[in-house]
Image 1: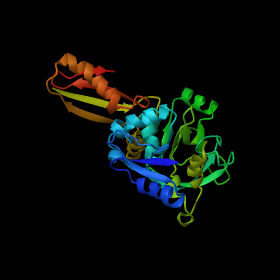
Image 2 (image 1 turned 90 degrees about the vertical axis):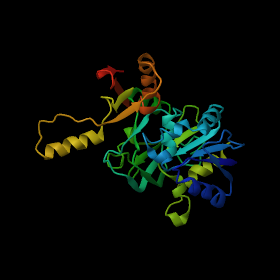
Image 3 (image 1 turned 60 degrees about the vertical axis):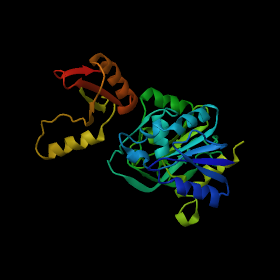
Image 4 (image 1 turned 180 degrees about the vertical axis):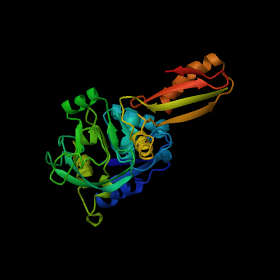
Length: 228
Length: 88
């Protein structure tokens, strides 16, 4: 499987992601420059974490107008796999490939810590290697991760199993304290109805080697690699 | 022509920054402050557009770029034109 990792000015998890894909998971992977007009022959596009355009205006708001994003949109509409991590998730919301928006964290703090997330839907391209309900320990690092969607949109997401990851405590309970950023319904990761576009706030690339304290993030990449 | 565009959260969206400012004001003894909503102000200078054209283009820019319509609303006014406020 060939991965393309999109690089915006201000991306800062692009190299970590490429490293995990190439050196740990032994996959073909390449950088894609945001000003290009061609994705090449990739099977999965990753929008990495970071602060594209300094998070000016709103997180992901300027990246939305990058030339390559039009290609990503068409790629997604053709059924190509797209994974947005952290800032990548924020970009997917801004361009409307996923519903909703991100607000500032409820405690107004930049949160950089390990969290537990529960796999709510283990039948997706990005999670099928997990057991339903499996807990993953993966770090988050964001200021704007407080997921918001209007009530009717939230019920639709729940009814169609589009909530893929939820913030939980170490016992797997979706409690209020475990919901560190204040997200609606403890949502940490979402998929589109077609099942080929996932956005998630936790950073799987920061939890894919034993030396990093957790390898739970590998499950996301390994699922993607073994899909189809 | 100068235009001022104000972007703020919709009433239905909780504004944690506004809440924090309100709490700080209460702590300082301004207990009569019922609510605070924080927003963003953009002052945009236009060139070569008629006022009619500006009236079409400003809401377009605000809706497409400056505000995220899922969580935010906007209002605007042409500054060099008697401070006429236009709600979206």
